[in-house]
Length: 142
Image 1 (cartoon, helix red, strand yellow):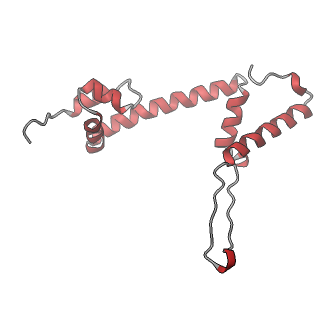
Image 2 (image 1 turned 30 degrees about the vertical axis):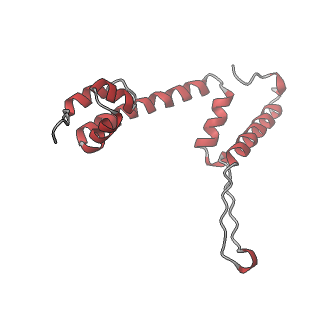
């Protein structure tokens, strides 16, 4: 292929560090376009491993920040954590299991359940706060 520039795995591995796994940042550091960077990441095990390692570092930092925020009393982050990580607080998914007028069975998923789940968590937290005597004087975020 005349005119096609070849890059080395080492160029990509060095470029990945510090990007958080953002492909456009990796491509800019190497000097190629986004699609070329994506092709190299998916095409070479060593580059893919460096990419996965970088993404995992960012995920760990994000988790650390979330846990730190919860530890400092951030009520909104606490609500989010419960909704995402605690099965008891996840929004329910509803399904209809009977066909209409003898027709095929339709399955419906409640895609707005996330909003209902947040309201449910807020109501539960407010009720718990009132039971503990905190009332409405406790700020949402300290």
